[in-house]
Image (cartoon, rainbow, N blue to C red; front, side):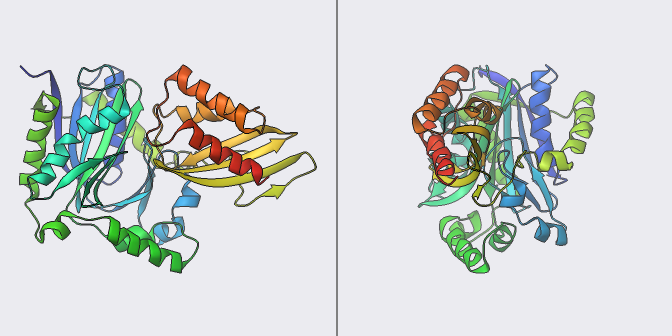
Length: 365
């Protein structure tokens, strides 16, 4: 007997926006007891640029280029970095209750369990893939699948992709970079550090066969039985509501600095100043902007391409640091206390990493 029964939504090609709206919607449906644990298989009909939940759109994506080229830019409900997505990729999206017996509470254990199926799917194609913490699937040191997890309500989401082919040039073009020379360096690095099924095998497998193998492997690795289903009327109605949210400027730009938005350090007065910093942790880039007044943090914005579970942890973090002394010890203790009290997890990003990012911003004020 399988541990659980899950619903399978084998949806094929979807509108670009819906590929990101749908797993948010299912998570909310699960929270409202309107849906069961679900595996979604889909891919976008047209390309899109997908921004991580904690990123700042105007700093991480070349919005003008995307506008001129009719590329949809959408913020997803989980963390990570900005990425170019198209039909060269097959998306798998698992959405299950946090208290489900299939779902490890620890995020590192969760990634290992829920990525076992795509890892094996690659291996069945003759590709020596392996799970690489924090949340990648790699072959010979090259990334061949990007994944991200986050909690929405009572559900935990993981999204990832089987990469048949990839448009490296478009990926590099949509990023906000300081110069074209730097863009060329990113392109070279991307080609060296990211690969595809076609590059690894020299051929293109049948998408349907790979999909069916992946579905079978999810049943095997999660000890579940998948029953093919469809969206309920409740879910279809919720999708309509969420589409309006996802195309709004309020959603796309919600990480924009509230009282301030600076790209450099500014001395306001003898007792007030602004500072910004970028700190690269194992789990991603941490960007911090601070306003310091009389030696204390008056306001702070934390963004980046990392993951925090729950997603509300970013606002909790900013709230906890507001009023802190602009000193390492007070900042670190507040962050550690918050992580302990609210059971926050940020794979590859420690309280010490966040503290360092804040201190770098403070030093530049």
